[in-house]
Image 1 (spheres, rainbow over the protein chains, first blue to last red):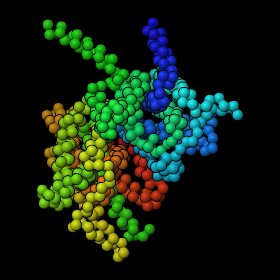
Image 2 (cartoon, rainbow over the protein chains, first blue to last red):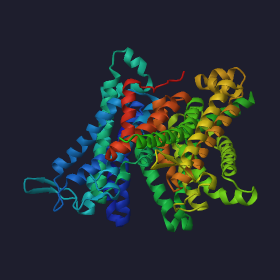
Image 3 (cartoon, rainbow over the protein chains, first blue to last red):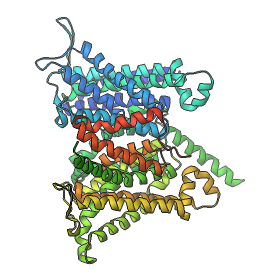
Amino acid sequence: MQSTLRAVLLLALVCLAALLPMAASDYYTGLAVKVMIYALFALSLQLLVGGAGLVSLGHAAFFGIAAYFVTLLSPESGAGNMLWLLPGAVLAAMAYAAVTGALSLRTKGIYFIMVTLAFAQMAYYVFHDTKLGGGTDGIYLYFRPELRLGEWVLLNLDAPYAFYLFTLACLLLGWGFLAALMRSRFGAALTGIRVNEQRMRAAGYSTFGYKLMAYVLAGGLAGAAGFLYAAKDGYVNPELLAWDQSGLVLLMVILGGSSRLWGAIVGAVALTLLQEAFQSQDLMGDIAQRWHLTFGLAIIVLVALLPNGLAGLPGQWRQRRQAARIKPSASSL
Amino acid sequence: MDPVIFLIQCLNAVQYGLLLFLVASGLTLIFGIMGIINLAHGSFYMIGAYMAFALQPLVAQYLGGGFVATLLACVVLASLLGYFLEWAFYSYLYRRDHLQQVLMTYGLILVFEELRSIIIDNDVHGVGVPAWLQGTVSLGGIMTYPVYRLFISLVCLLVAGLMYWVLTRSRLGMMIRAGASNREMISSLGIDINRLFRIVFAIGVALAALAGAIAAPVSSVYPGMGHAVLIICFVVVVIGGIGSIRGAFLAAMLVGFVDTFGQVFFPAAAGVMVYLLMAAILLFKPEGLFKQG
């Protein structure tokens, strides 16, 4: 009963999201696309943080590498073909994830956080210091890729609504894939590794292989988000790989809460909207110029108030209600 | 390579390495003892540099001036700042997991950068080298080397020596070393762990600020100067092994040499060299050169 209710609710939400551009202005449609891209990006990191308990602070590398892949390999005179650009971008991100993952997964805890950060910085400097992608100036993608079979154009992303729906479809596919993955044997093994890796190894699992697989898959999904990002803005620069980008996406996961898969989506929505609100002149007045200050303070306050993230909020409330119920009876004794 | 140029590059490498050591030693102490991932450590370096810039006229007016007086004022103010920050923000993080610490210190970075832009501005500023350090030393006849860079190395070496003495010979050092190897044990032995944490944090902030202040005349002060230092110091700490001062020293020198000579021999790949070094070391020693406890 409850699962049917949830399915209906989810379906209604998806329909509502698909119809949003009909009612909203171009600005809000663009904002919604940005939110969805970051939601997909955050979901990919959620597989590592919430799924396998691996905290990576270098996830932006995969996002940026895929974005650069599309931009560099698209022809300058017309639209590139998504049929190979999208898988190519994802595979490029996965390849970098496989190499760096094999090295960084040798470490644990704080070391892992910092090693992933260092590998992302390495990729950042490749684009920052060399002429490969236009250096610090970045490069432009003049035409959004389209889906072509021979001469036959299946999907043209130039219309805002088409791109919006395509992004939504990618997000839902990514989410569905991860949800199915976490329910599978593989997902159960990952959960086991997160809870107690020693025990999993004693039970005969080669945990390294599982973790590497998760790392590569997460890299690939982040690559898909990077592909969408490049197609959305038509411009990439090295800052896409910078560590504050990795930090931001990790913030989304933490803020949303890593105990549930959808926490990442909630976190991405909340953080992007928060950023947008603090930057808006209409809402904040003159302090919008100084939005880093308000945004930073908001983050600190949220950390203090939400130890389990937004997804943990219902549980937190339930606990408080229970505590309130128990207290009076205890004092009457 | 010409031996004189080689010597100059070596001096540069040593100076850079020592400067990195000052920042990284604080970072590794805070990691090792308090178990906190402090992303805001680079901000303390930035704050030190900006203090050197902003305090110079004030010190000249009220304390009779002098570069050393400015440096001392920076260190004192930074320790007070560290003591306050630990009390106000960091002391809530010990029971939380690493994720929450990353999140909060990220928020602090944003706040520090914006406060810096409000109080000073977003321009690049130069900090003057004091008159008595402006000269150069001649090397091999034609080449010269600025005295101020030698002064940086000297001060860093003095601080490193002082730290070595404090850590190995004093009671505080004993507590810090014990805390790094087993936090729960020393608190159950009756040592006020909260006070120890506060002192260690203040020392870490003071070291980072001193490094920033002393580097300011060479590097000039600019927005975002803390970020680059932070990431490199993470690399240093990882290579050296978390919590190990000795490891941080060795790793800082290694990174200093690899980075400096990387820029000489492979200018195109200079940014990547340090990370390759780290990857190579982690391949053989997944927990750094000197693992603590």
